[in-house]
Length: 294
Length: 323
Image 1 (cartoon, helix red, strand yellow):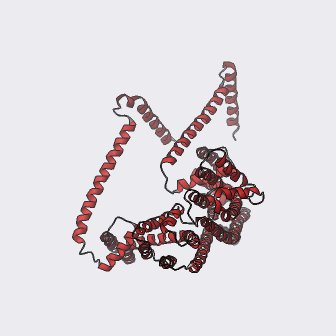
Image 2 (spheres, one colour):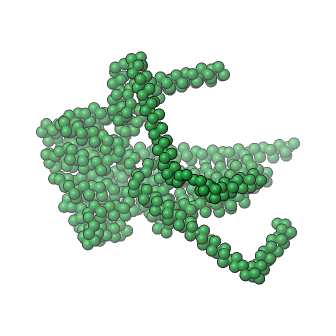
Image 3 (cartoon, rainbow over the protein chains, first blue to last red):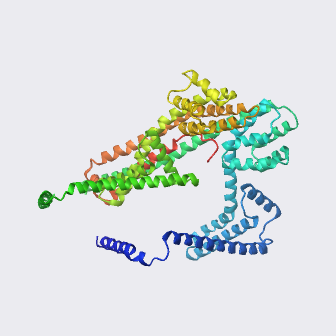
């Protein structure tokens, strides 16, 4: 209580000082001060990042041949990076892998000194540190693919209904009509497709197939390419449409099952609470029995 | 209560009242003004914050986070129950309720930290209960919107407005709860000088997110129609068919989820009530710190479990991932 009163009186004194004494010799208005502080901090941060990038560039340039990076691996990483539209190089990913593993190794060395068994278990983190950066990127790609697949049935049925009416339709028009309805990842991918269409529809479709190698999208690209050659394959298109309808239902079912599972996990907490109550109950029964006999 | 304490309290009050009357201090009216001033200040602050928020939302698109999710939840609650409140008003109401609840719960638990936990989870439980109520009306509304879309989409070939008018001609097609919105849409476009886009936006706002796809497609269709484009609306019929297919299964599963939750909660309550009949156990649960902690965690687990269980039952089938 005394401490509380002291704190309160301290707050009161600070308030009084800030009210009466401080305005007399305040050189700058609060807003201006805040703004200039913000400006200073932003410029300092920018300087720091520039310096960091400069040094990183030098290091990476010197190390780029010594980073255990084969040409194939570099190509793979480049594919992922371009897919996610990141502003990093494969060398940076490799460097982060090495740094994570080194940190994990040092940590486990330290722990081995203290407690050998735990230290040897810690050595798992060396492997995990090596896998983590690439794994994270791959997860992102997977999530992106999932999002694209979620939107794909709607996109495809738009294409289908328009092409079923007439063959002379420019794919870019359809894509532009769909863009307002698309989610972020789908819009990204379709934007790239739109850019590529300027070099020809067939080229764009081939690139799309290569970029997003999912079963339904490959099929879609094949069908569209056949159409471009002048064949009227409406029946094939209708078949793919039915398949995509199933995909839609399956996606909904998956979500339902996911929710069901998560609900069961949540309700397990209630069972734990009940078990604790029962344990306490039996504990008191036990004590009562001992008292009765003792 | 001590008799001395009671006596001195009564004495103090009498003296205060006597002084108030004799010296004409007008304490009651001052008290009234103080309360009114407090309420007015709060209202002013809320209005200012509301204006600021609306302004900011127009400029910055906010990222998805816990706070924005809470805001949208509360706003939909206010909209569904027609509460005469803004988001800020609701927040301050919740704050006052929280304070009152902590005061009440302290009587039972005799520990401020634990009672704060209990009140937070009870509040979460209350809000969840109300969202549960609003969800039931909302799912019926979505059903009506789906019916309306199924009728409108094949008719949209000659333009969305023509289709709406055709549907409005006969009384049976649109349910009476959403019919006024469509009537208003036609009125807005034809008589009040709205552009098609604006009228559609208003309709979309009234009907909610389920109508988003139709509204976007209608606007595109209206402003740059091409040959064969009218059939793009048929996709919405397909989507609705998938949704209907899943809805039947969904209801059954969600009912079972609710039933399970109710069963477990009842079991816990009955067991606690039964164990209160044993003397030592009652003493442990009500007077011991550990027992109080156990009770608190039980209440928290039940309320948060309820909230999670209801959150899992929110509308399924938001096509197109996270927007």
